[in-house]
Length: 320
Image 1 (cartoon, one colour):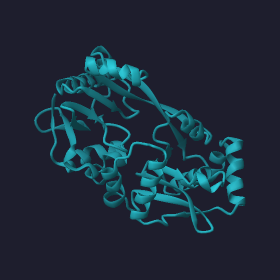
Image 2: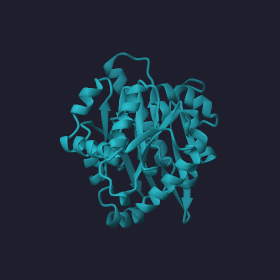
Image 3: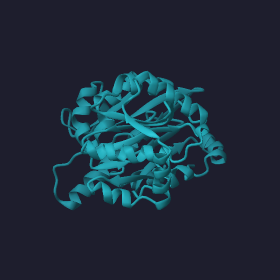
Image 4: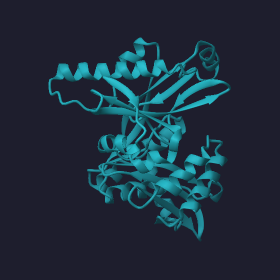
């Protein structure tokens, strides 16, 4: 088995996108340009059987490995022709061992990476003293009738949605231009003191987004914008990527209504799943849970050099 850098985005995406969807598409990954490192997993010199990606940055003289901003995982995938359970398990273990050894070889001061939810064998990372941390997202099954989906909402959730509708909150689809969306979310993220990656956010709206891979829903009252949700999608899954509301408006249920409309839109598009794309903040988790979704685990692996780990234990004890 050989792990080596892939310089041609098309080579990786041609194999990865059918498995991973939108976050392995050329349009999405091209947002990150030459900053993105793509590694191919080869059975031999020519046969590509898997791969993954990450950002490698340097700061204060240290090397850091991390996810591309706004991307939920490192895109690890691999395929096997074997149908024997033992052979499949052995193959998975070999792949994960090679991936683990690759990250160790990078000698980074800090590695923080999340993996797709389908990847569950992290024993090689545990054996190599990485911290393997469970994280969670919520997913709505869109193959149910919309009436069943709505019936699974928390009653309080349905009540505030009805209040927003009674207050004549109007929701429209794709009614803001790319620059308007970018400016809205820049302001929204600023107001919450969230981490902002301006260049990548700009790239998502200006380079990536079109009607074939994303949509926005906008809530207004008397022409005033009350909130916006922006989702990206592929043929199987719609992901809630960004959401923001004007808390000063005093109108209740705006965000709830926007999420409901996003779920309805995703179902109309033929998606099978609506993914809230990470639900680890306590307040956010409670809000997402009110839509009656399924809790789905995924894993992150974290490792820091000893001095940095000691420092991080004071600030990020839950991770280190």
